Amino acid sequence: MILNKHVGLLTAALALQLGVVQAQQNPVKLDLGSFEGNKGSWTEVGKVWADPTVPNELQSEDGSGVFANLPSKKKQGADIISKEKFGDVDLSLEFMVAPASNSGVYLQGNYEIQILDSWTSTTTKPGDNGGIYQRWDESKPEGQKGYQGYAPRQNASKAPGIWQKLEVSFQAAKFDASGKKTENARFLSVRLNGVTIHENLEVFGPTRGAMTGEDVAEGPLRIQGDHGAVAFRNIEITPFDAKTPTISKVSYETFQGSFNSLEELAGKTSVAKGTAASLSEVPASVSDVNLTKYTANLNVAEAGEYQITLQVPGGMSGLAIGNETITDLSDRGVRVKKQLAAGDNPIQLIASKNRNWSVDGFNLSISGPGLRDTDLLVSEAGAYQDTDPILVDADETPVLRSFRDIPDYKRLSHVVSVASKEQVNYAYDLETGTLIQVWRGEFLNATPMWNSRGNGVSVPRGAVINLGTPAVNAVNSDYTASEEFRTKGYQLKNGSEDIVFFYLLAGESVKDEINVLDSGKGLHRSVSGIADGYYRIAAGTEIQKIKKGLYLLPETGLYLEYDEATYGAPVTHATAGGEGIFLPAKGNIVYNLLF
Image 1 (tube, rainbow, N blue to C red):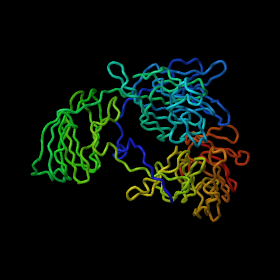
Image 2 (spheres, helix red, strand yellow):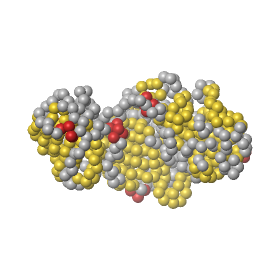
Image 3 (cartoon, one colour):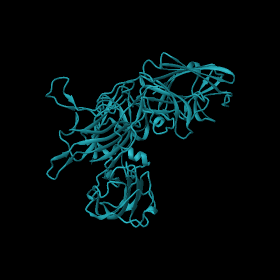
Image 4 (cartoon, rainbow, N blue to C red):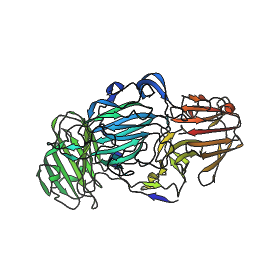
């Protein structure tokens, strides 16, 4: 097995290590009434869907909660612009793009994140779904007018007509008192369908089609509506406009030696003590192992609940706020959620450098009302400590056996993950003969398998669709479980492009063949040798018919395509494997999953 070890930028590593979630903010929820500029093509509806074979068309149903751009000859599509303006924000929304359609979301009206039907694309450009669109200069020669765009790391898109989720952390350009720009705008992170596709991207000016030709401190959210049918729901913006907290009036006391608990300090005399205006001005009194106690004032501009996180890389830490006292030390870092008053709040810190290889200093950060996670002090090791990811090279290792964790279920120990050149991937549980996950994009992160002692778990890197908890898919005509399942392994055909799994079910030999569709739109599956009854396709209780032989499964976010004349309509039923969507089986079952 050949694995590709890749060093990446992991800006949330400390939070992941400590299991930290930023202090919750109160988001601004936007509906169609929050925008202006609607010329009649935008309307509020209760439901939208698409036939993935019909270009630039969304169907809708009356109701509320979704606003859709449904342009027509009489009602030409137009951009809509939020009435409220924003600076630093987190943006979360869901969108549905029609087949072959195009839209975009502009932060501050100026910086576009592209929305596009990028289904089946295996390469990415700035103009693809989730890309940061290019800047534009008409004075340049043809082919060079577009510049400084950012392509997404991978295509994490879903099929048209499926709801997709976009999550953005954006930092606006900064200006001094005279209005001179001192810092460019940045996309701190962009996640598409749960996959990080951009991280810490600096944008040097507005992208093509911006509302203004220059950066601004605040601007509206703009949604493109003049390029085709698109729908949105659950738009939330969390502003981050609070003043950065400060720490002042620092007192410190340093003890020589390696300390793992506060009890070990009993009877010890400090080797250095003093005061400083800030934590960064405290002198490094001892270069060897030592423990330092700090007291200081933490000043916040607004009262509210804050989360403070302290980590001593390679050492131990203690943290207390207000009248509390530190009773023990932790080698995994400390986080505290605390109501703070506006102004100064007493704070106590302990940093124990208890090993010779521990670095000097510590990492201290805070988040709270109007404030995203902000560093107050960074150690010599840097703010974020994490293992470099170990990424499986799909060209070298297109099939990998491993453990797998799936939501709300025990760890699976006999999972086969399969990649393809179309970047259509899937995971199969050998213990039940179940197709458990499908995803589009990059293959696997094997870091958990090999980091430290490892736990054997691999993690899909693309936009994962979970098909439900593992259970033998074939059931009898009364939905009782089939008996005597026993795996007989699998056979590779044509590399990883076609794989046949074999198992015994109720004494009969079953052949389960899975291959990637030539179109790259999903998987083809053919199971033969099963008894008459029903075959479970996926979890869920909702089925929406698009047309004969094509159904949408909204809860999982995929299409089911099959010969309806042969097998009949899908049905839902509860079995030992949970609520599921079944097709009638007649000794075999053949279907496609499109995603």
